[in-house]
Image (cartoon, rainbow, N blue to C red; front, top):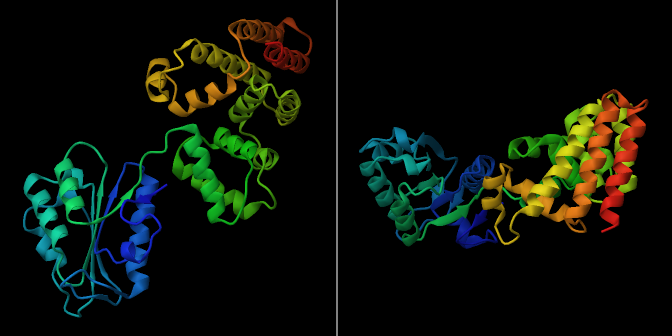
Amino acid sequence: MPSSGTDAAGGDQARAAPVTVIVGDEELLVERAVSAVVAEVTAAGRRPGGPGQAALAGSPDVHDVRAADLRPGDLPGLTAPSLFGESCLVIVRSVQDAVKDAAAELGRLAAAPPPGVALVLTHSGAARNRPLLASLASSGCRRVDCPAVKRFGERLDFLRAEFGRAGRKADDAGLRALLDAVGNDLRDLAAACGQLADDTSGLINQAAVARYYRGRAEATGFTVADRAVEGKLADALAQLRWALATGVSPVLITSALAQGVRALGRVGAAARVRGAEALAAELGMPPWKVDRVRQQLRGWTAEGVARAHAAVALADARVKGEGSSPGYALERAITEIVACRSRN
C-alpha cells in the first residue's frame, strides 16, 4: 500500500507539503497516489505554502507531463502564473527518464517551487536518476512509496484493504479464491473487489467468490488442488463436485492436481533458507506461488509427496479412459492426497 515517508498518518504536515515524490513501479498504487494529491489540492481550495510561499488558492491549473518529454526551459512555462491567478499543479511522471538538464531543473524547482505551485513527481525507484531522488529528499519533499506487490501475503493484504475501502469483509478462504479466479494483476483484483462488494452481500467467502466467478474452469481446478494439498478433504470434495456440476473438464482438474503436487516436490526439495524471490527465479514460479506452496508444505514429507504423485498419475489414467467414472477417480485421488498428508 502507498505509504508516506514524511507523515505516514497523513497529518497536517504531509497535507501542507508543496512537493510530493511518489516512488515505486506498482502502476495502480502510483496512479492512486497521484489522484489523491490532485484531489487534495483541488478540494482544499487553499493550501498552506512553505516558508516564503503564498497559499494555493482556488481550483488548480493542472499540467500532466512525462519527464522524458521535458526539455530544458519547459518547466518555467508550466509553472508560470495564469492570467486569472489560479494555482498550479504540475505532475511530472517517470522522472527517472528525464535527461540530465531537465532533471537538474526539476531538482531546483522542487527545492524552491514558485508561489502558488504544487509539484508531484513520480519515480520508478530504478537506479537511473537516483541522485535526483536524493536531492528531493534533502529538500524536505513529502515521499509516498508504492512498492510492487509481489508476495502472496502482500496480495492478501491488498485485497483486505480493498474490501475495507468498500466497507466489506472477506475471510482468508474468500481472498485466496479470488486470487485463484482473477490472477495477480492489481488492477484486475481491485476491479474484482469492487464488483464483489457491489453485487454481493454478507461475508465474502469462498462460496461467494465461486458463485460470482462460475465458469472459470482453470481457476476452479486449482482451487480443488489447493484444498487437497492443504489437507482439507471436505472443502476439496465440495469444490470438485461444484466444478464437475458446472462443466469443468475432469482433465483440467487432474492437471491442476498434478501441478499442485509437483509444486510441493519442487519447493520442498529446495533450500529452505533461500528467499522467495531467488527461489522463484530458479524454479520459474512467481514469488507469491513460492510463498503459498511453502505454507502448503506444512505436514508433508518427501515420502508423502511421492505417494501423492502416484495417486494423481493413477487418476489421470482413469480419467483418460482406463476408468468408468472420471468423477469417482478424482474423488479417490483427492482422498488419497489428503491421506498422504495426514499420515505424515
